[in-house]
Image (cartoon, rainbow, N blue to C red):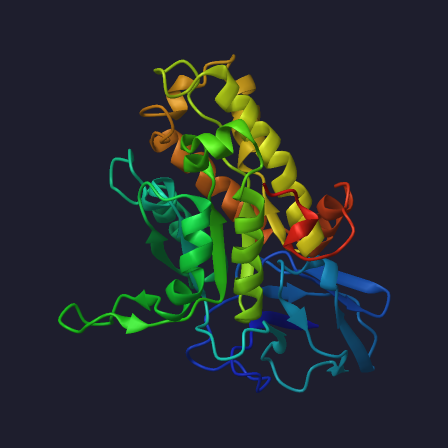
Length: 333
């Protein structure tokens, strides 16, 4: 039996000409037999007995937030040589398909990168190669803090735009299906946050996450990347400790909100260790990554976006959960 696992954007169960997204690695189960999708989304399951068979998609093998329809009945052998279309859907309401909005400060903007796209450029390339379609929009604002992010997330989400098909046309509105959140680096610069953490960082991130969720979009919440300790007086060792403590709370927030964590801090610390402790090559100044650092960010976001649901669930269960509740769950002076 041959099938193809595709993103059914309009929910009609058919592969339409504009539905380009496929799902590598997704597992199909037909009776006691199974097969995994190739990079182009096709699956071949050999030895399936003749007759009407039930086809199931393993939900644990889907990327985060995507869902599968009810079990399908398929005729074996197939009546035609074409592959059985296996639809996968994404609950996003009227939001724009395959659009990822990058939301944050100057690191999201890409300051310090050679081409000015930071992690967004390499991530878009990776996602397009993996899924078949992806657009990443830049909603980073330099020198902003998480509190400003919480204040602007609703209007930014509603006003997000994508490049037009023709360079002579104006940008087109595109409410994102996903939001990539990396905020908090600049909160250290406010004495109230530096001296009395977590200050407003966690409650601001919680507001951002919940606004995204309430807008029928899907958040990927990143931990704050480490800083380039010792570069100058702006990055004393105490700042790195502050980042580490905030990130511990961000991990708890991701678990409490049931959203996907993008653990950038863990990825950077591992890279530092693998590089013999040389962390300066990952930065261009006190906080902004070099091209190497941005590539690491892109890789970490890519893995979080494409990893199977089973990995996401395991990660969430590894955190110590606080009881569900409003923003006051986290201390805020």
